[in-house]
Length: 216
Image 1: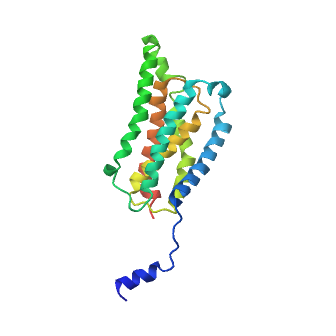
Image 2: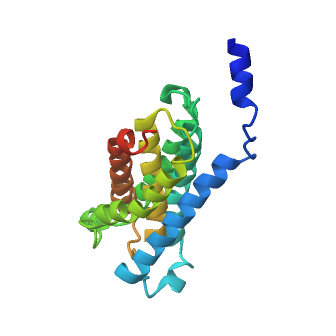
Image 3: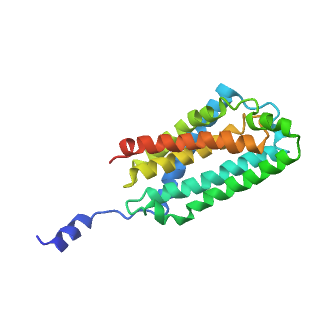
C-alpha cells in the first residue's frame, strides 16, 4: 500500500469537525468552572452586602472591566494554543494588547493618587485585604483551570507550557472577575497590584503544570 492510499483509507471515515467546535468546547469548560467558583465565593466568602450600591459606582466596573479585558485576551490565546498548529509565542504579536488594560488602570491609579494626600497612598495601595487577595484569586481560579483542562482533553495542544500558562491566565482573570462580587476594595492601584499578582500566580501555576497535565 502506497502512502497516498494509506492516507485515503485513514481519512475515509473521519467525521468533519463542526465549525467553532474549539470555541464551544473552551466556553463550556470556562462556564462549568465559573459556576463552581461563583458557588465557592457565595458560600465561602459571601457576596458583598452593598453590591447593589457598588454596581452604581465606577470602582466596581473599573475592576470588572480590567479583569474582563485580561480574560478576553487570555481566552483568545487559549483558543489559538489549543490547536496542534499553534504558532510560537513570538508570532502572537497581538499579545501586547494585554498591556493596554494594565496601562489604562495604572493611569487611573495615578490620577486617584494625585487627588489625595501622599500620606494616604499606602492605605490605597494595601487596602484591607492585600495579604489574602492574590491567594484568593489563585484559589478561585482552580475550578476554572480544571474546566479548561477538561476542554483540552478533546483538543490537541502541542505547546504545552504555553497552553498551560494561557489557561492559567484565563482562569485567573475569570476568577478575579467573579471575585469582584465579594471584594470591597475600590482603589485602582490596589486592583493593579494585588489582582494582577493573583492572576500572574495562576498563569505561573498553569505554566508549571501544563506540560504534565496537558500531555496527550
